[in-house]
Every structure is written in structure tokens, then in C-alpha cells.
Image (cartoon, rainbow over all chains, first blue to last red; front, side):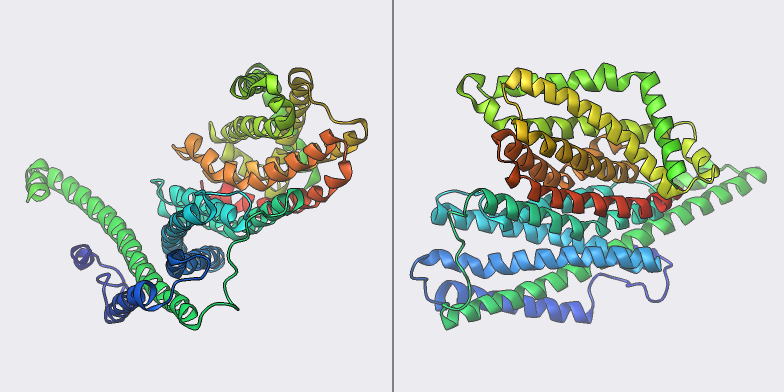
Length: 271
Length: 224
């Protein structure tokens, strides 16, 4: 992306690459933290009395699910702020958060299914409102991203996406409420997911805490980079349009003075 | 605003009535879906009768997609959008008008489907369950029509709208599907008291979408 950035004529505040001092520090901290988490989660922390080794997946699963919900809120906040302030910055925040949120939600669903198979004997159950809500949130995020990828006028897309992003949190609340009632009214949940917290071993709790810290660092690193890539993409689109217009103008002037409009352009395009 | 809504609803219904798409294509499709469910689930073992409330609402939601898509397409041709903006009708009124028109079509479709379910699935609401059935149908229709109109305008004018709209709208309608199905189940089973609770959820859903839709319709109509 650095090459694209050099050729753009964006404002002084625009990033000229996706890496910076700040992201390098965050990235390094995330990397070191991940190594520490692997040692802590897989080697140092004890196994659970009932779940045995399976408890270890929780150190990744719980933080990724939490971060995915955080991303969902960030997208809605970004959308509301865009509709209010009309700033591209907030629109890009909403976009970046939605994409990273979808990644974390997919990770949470996959790790959850891997954990559920040996624990509950099945990859998926409908008895837990959290499961169904998470899957629905993932689908809502996929829909949002699909709208974002539709080619067309970036301003129109931004406005439509903002309204869709604004509805994300209300939709999740409605889905959550309906699934909760559906399961509790009809049959008592037969399988209770392990209650994390009070009875957890100290080292296990610390591992989970580390999972949250590392997860947050990875999230911050990814969102900042995704934000910058999206920003540069937008700038590149705009500068390409400006270049095309300038080219056509030059072409018109060339043909006006009797020059061959196709000569220099073909040379440039392949040069 | 209400006058504008009635004006738009009247226009939409007239367009639908004259084009006959709803009566000649959507309604027969609803019956095809009802038949397909019977092929997929063995009718001999009573699964159909037990699943009837859920199948009913799945059929409604699938057909609603087509109705919503039609309602959005009506606006997109021949500069209708620009003409509408020039009429100085209130955008909230336009939104409500479209909701009313889609709602009216859906109610007619639901009546037809209910007859189909009673006749073909051998499942009917109990006598004391009828008020719940009517109330659920009215509220769920408001939910589907409001959300459908809003998402319809969100996806309208895009080349990919036919494939994008189902992806955006169907996950959003999940709470409506759950709530309406549970309420119908209670009505069919003869214990309507269990079902009334769900109407609260449907009411909140309808309210959220009518309010946000009325606010969003103007800005969304402007920029496309």
C-alpha cells in the first residue's frame, strides 16, 4: 500500500502507509503476548477438573466473542457518527470494525464448535441464546460487508451502509431477546455452558485475562491497519478518477492541436 | 402525513392490482411452497401438522421477499424517485404508505396461506386461539412490511439488489419468525395464554422499524 500512498495527493493528515510507530509497538506487544498466552494457556495453567484439557480453548474463545460484540457496537457508533457529522473518518471506522468483527465472530463460532463437540457431544445446540445470537450477528455483519462491497458512488454507499450499521445493535438486541424467550419458554436449557468466574483457578483466571489483553491488542492492530487500508483505497479511487479526467483533458487538447491522442496514452499505460 | 401515506398506499395497490403480479405469480408461488414442505416432511407421520405454524411463517417470509422487491422496483424505473421527490409528499408519509400497501398484500397472502395450511396440513387454530392468530398476523405483518420497506430502499437502485435484499432482510426477520411462530403454535395448541407474550416482542420490533424507517426514508431516497 505504500506505493499507492506515495502517488496520492491526499491531505497532510492522511496516512502514507499502513504501518506506523504506534502500530509496530502494538504489533510487537501482541506478538510477545501471543507467545506468552500460548505458554500460559497450553503449558503453565492447570487443566480443569470437569473439562480437562478442553478448558484451554476458552482463553481464545471468550475474548474473540467479546471483541466481536465490541466491533458490532463500534460499527453502530461509527454509523451514527457518520450520519451526524458526515465524516469519512467515522464511516471508515464503521467499515473496519465490521470486517474485523466478522473475523473475530467466525473465530469465536469455530472455537466454540470445536469445544462443544467433545463437551456437549455436538458441534451446535439451539438451547443457548448466546450461540444463536452470535451466529445471527455474524450473518448480519456479512450482509453489512456485502453492501459495502457493492461498486458505485462511495458517498451513496457510505450513507446506505451507515443506516444499515445503525440497525446492527437494535437487530442484535431483538434477536437476542427472541432467542432467549424461545429457549426458556419452551424448554429449560438442558446444557448449561460452564459458568466462568467464581470457582476458577487463579492461574486459569489469569490466562483468561491474558487472552483478553492479547485479543484486544490484536484487535487494535487489525482495526488500525484495516482503517488505513480502507482510507488509502478511497484516496486511490479518488486520485485515479482525477488522473483519468486529467488524461482525457490532455487528450482533447492534443487532438485540438492536431497531435495523435492515442500515441502518448498507450505509451503511458504500458510504461 | 397520513394523507400522503394513503395516497402512496393507494397508488401502490393500484399498480399491483393492474399488473396482477401478486395474484398471478406470488399467490400461486405461496401454494407451491406449501406443497414443497409436504414433500420435504413426511405428511404421514404428523410432522406437517406439528410444524404447520413454522412452515406458515417461513412461506410468508419467502413470499414477502418477492412483494418487497416488487414494491422497491416500482420506484426505481423511469425516474419515479425524482418525480416522487418533486411531489413534496412527506418522506415519512411515503414510507408509511409503502408499509401499508405491502402490509395489505401480505395480509391477503396470509389469509390464503392459512386456508392452505388448514386444508393441506390438517392443522387449524383452536376456537379460543383465533383472536391470537388475528393479532399475531396483524403485528407480524407490520414488522415484515416495515423492515421490508426499509431494506428494500437500502438495496434499491443497485445492480445486485435481487441477491442483496434477501441476505440483508432475512436475518433481520429472524425475531419476527420466532415470535410469530411461537404465538401461532400456542393458538394452534389451544393455549393462547402462552402466545400473547410474543406480541410484545413483535410490537417492539414493528415500532423500531416504523420509527427508523420513517426517519431514514427521506435521506435514503435523496441520494440515489
